[in-house]
Image (cartoon, rainbow, N blue to C red; front, side, top):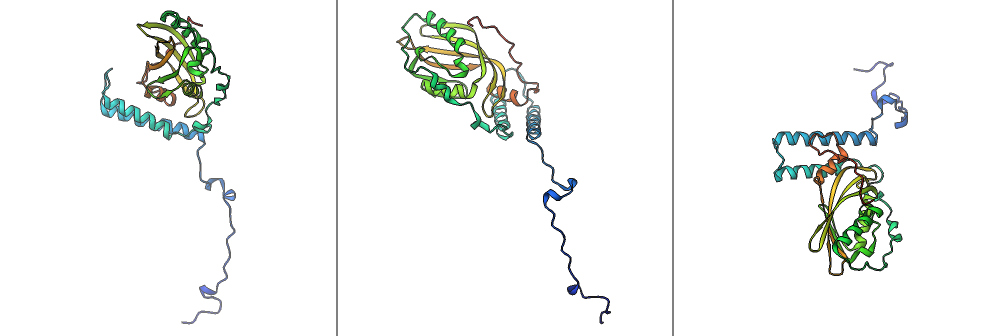
Length: 262
């Protein structure tokens, strides 16, 4: 059947081009919404905390002696939270500038050999005064050249490596020595409280105050040859307290102390 003269075939109809609208020209209601970095960080922290709490509740583990499976779950959850959360401030690359190492007198004469008690007292007062346990500004006169360090998370060989690692990570913290104990025949231990902020995985990471026990072994020359640290709380507790301090199973913060070695 023939078409009427006032009706044109579809292929012959004039086409009108629609005006192009860039993303900036879209009405506000049509723009895709994005969350700011701070809000994303908080939401991720809440989600990680909820998942962790749910897993612990479902596992029905309780008691002061946690089975290895619970320790594993908590450690993995803490590591996952640290890895998944956004890292404002540039991440680990934004750590403290290690130029502070240039001010250390690496060639200073070694300390003369003394009795263990005198060494422990002098060492503890220097530790408190210089704060090298957190800022890395060591006094080489106390240390052997082959000094080694180990704690539950890291280990280093050499005094320079220890100084650089400590100052890079913990330069925003404070150390307060509260006690020193002799451990015959060739070692002593300092108990100290740490508080402040860490530089990794991003600058300003809150560290819940806790106690560290540093055990030092002295060599035949009367110099400190090694240090082994232990913490009053597990590493996963330290990390989770930075991201989700409201979790009910976390240990409380250690109250402030006044160091007798200041």
